[in-house]
Image 1 (tube, rainbow, N blue to C red):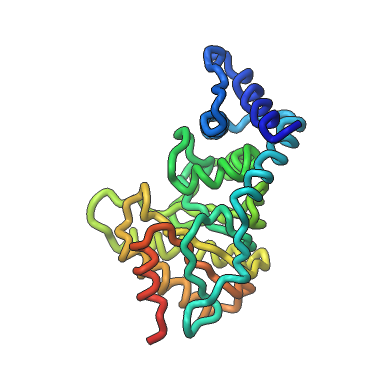
Image 2: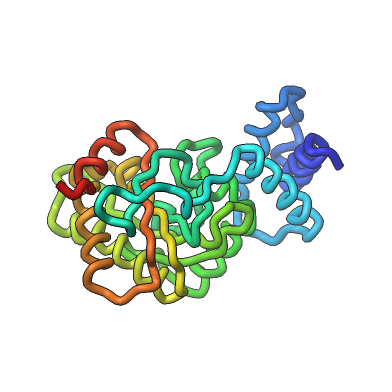
Length: 262
């Protein structure tokens, strides 16, 4: 199959799963096809799917991954004065590291809103259907939603990293409380502890809770920087490098000020 034929195959297979989709026509334009495929993946419930589908999906997503480009975290420059910390602005799903961190919701199944821009949606979309299936198995075994401040580890499947660390940050409805701050700090500690338990050497953090969960960016950055540096300085850990991944210019400037050594 060509890359386009793979995309059409995947769309058709997902459309045939649900009789309600029978009226949906596959568009001719490439980007609209990509959006339809991603949207169908986003809304699909965690139920079994054929080995043939997964094989073609993996080939397709890996080709898309390679076309976007992969960034080797080991080649990124450290912040001045601390060789264990990196500040990097870019798309975390392109990062080759031992683990990247996903800001998840308490169901831990990914974002079900089609084409949503949250990191949870993008990570699941680019990892593949297996990630939701794996997370569902974890949550079924656990028997309850994931509490804020904790973390789970999964394979990364079709992402360039090896693992994904899923953590649930606090949701801010009004004034930030002391409990909110402690839960956010616990997200960073839990991820680093889980990374160490699996002998991981590099971890890339997104800006947990600052998007859909509305934690003030400056406060969140201060908690992230302080917590990570305390863990690295006070605990024995396999983690050699922590990448603070930011997407917006404002976040990059915040972390640049917080991490400088002067």
